[in-house]
Image (cartoon, rainbow, N blue to C red; front, side, top):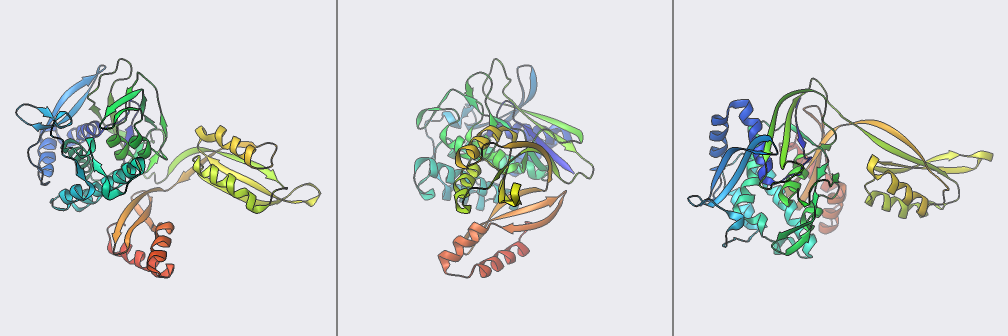
Length: 409
């Protein structure tokens, strides 16, 4: 099995992701061939008046590749500095990809990425998705960054992707909405559910596009998986940092028959015999909002044969203290116990599939390179059943048909 490990120790940006993946491809097929294939694929998009530059560069003594997109090819003017920013909405960007001749999966992933971004922007600004007009991310360079990432994944034959925790940086950033704290609101919205940290000199280390791409690509977050290192690629960012080099590292790893992802969690348990069953719900909701992986209860008998519940919560190690505090505050227990547990889990990814009844999220679970099952998201089935006054079983049958006819498996 082939795995790309994204090492976001210095953060991530769209241009850094493209440069790092290009570096991997160049290691495999040679720089000249990699650049020719990459440019050929980019030319399949109906975009004009831009050019790209791939060149060797270095930050903090680490050499890699930098990637730049220019509005004015002769003057080498970056689109983000252009006074004539084009503000596109989601529909405009969708048309660019639908009118392209890119591979179908590249088109689908690119549109999905912009849909996720539009939803994040809409939530941040309190508007509908149709009202979202992209600023920095609507510029040509960001469209090329996102399309370029999926093009390179296609040229690399779509290995599975695992990511490290993400360094988001600190301080403030100037953007179209003024001076904002790091991570910027849209970046923070995209990072929901992802493991993050902040170290190093104050700067924006992860951009909205960087957060978006990791969110879409990564099927799991962990330390570097076991296997044989085949190639390493380094994407050099625009900014200069005096401590942590502004470089995104990606590593191509070949493993034998490894088919599961392995990691460690903390199991928090407590025995309770004096709470009404319905009173557990607020604690469970708060735990899930705090990032709990699972929360459940097991019937037990305590001393003098009293019936009770064992209240259990599985959390990532970094959420242990907060989860324990929630349990102590919102249940009647006097204390909790901890166990560090190891687990093996299938690799999975969620894709949005368009249907006559709207988008349905499909989760595909993989054992190695083999898809074991594809499951529609129950909340989406429930929403469609309510909206169209259909039995949920009928909606599930429609989803099963779509799975059969699609290339999700």
